[in-house]
Image 1 (cartoon, rainbow, N blue to C red):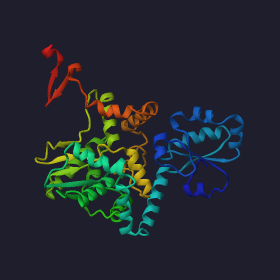
Image 2: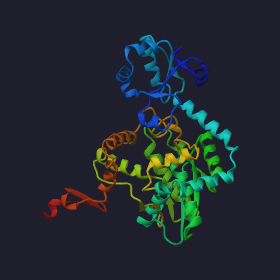
Image 3: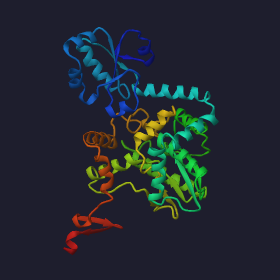
Image 4: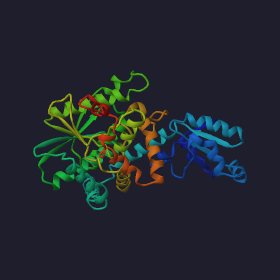
Length: 389
């Protein structure tokens, strides 16, 4: 039999080797305890480089379990390994089944946490342990880009992931201990989550004492039949619904949880796939909802700091809001991956060679020299250097 369930793998008491064949960036975020990483993209060469002939003979005396996103790609490798004489199995449903169990375990254990004391501990971690890397960068972004004005009513939009939940706690702290010249509203849209993901959001909001306002839409159903890539339309629809609901609640701004890494990834994606120089702005006026504005208070916060905060407080968040991509690593789901995942990998490689790379990507759009630019657009009008040469 080629496939084994998670239960069968764990009940196999023999000494075994567990290989996660997802990409290294996804393996680093989360994997099965004790698993090693040999990415699918270079599996044969990496496996042969890692083990000599004697070690390979030893591996043939023990079971080997392979983990991919869904259990499909690992089937192919398992067949090849079996042909070479290994007792090799593909984990049925892949990492998706591990994620489901992790979520269920988290839900089962949620009621064991004392909500009041737990929420206070999380809040203290923000202003003490993570003061420099999160709290100060959050307040610096708000001040640097003038994101909050007196009388603002801000819809803090929570998708259920680590970024937006952190942003909600930061806004709570700012309101409690700041000038209180604004009012936050913690807004959760349910576009069609599966029951388990939705319950994780509700439980986390309860544990963290975030008083959420929930409204439902049928966005996931609406984009279900939109070709191979419904992501763009889904994102636009979600943004529109958030603006609309926020306005109904008397808000003049919505806050989204995009962070520093999202910004530099967007810059490179625009250059490499869009053929343009642009960035994810720290704030912008809505073109479709008059008087509404979007702000990104995590603009200067690194994703690595958010992950450390999450792990330090033993929190578990949904990987992705999308029900079509629940098994993916980079965006939550599909076996195909995404352009953003490719950019993450590229930036990680460049940063490993020179730590100033990421900072310079960020700074590049702050230091545009129009005298050395062939052409640029402003307010939809194209300007060319030959116009005034």
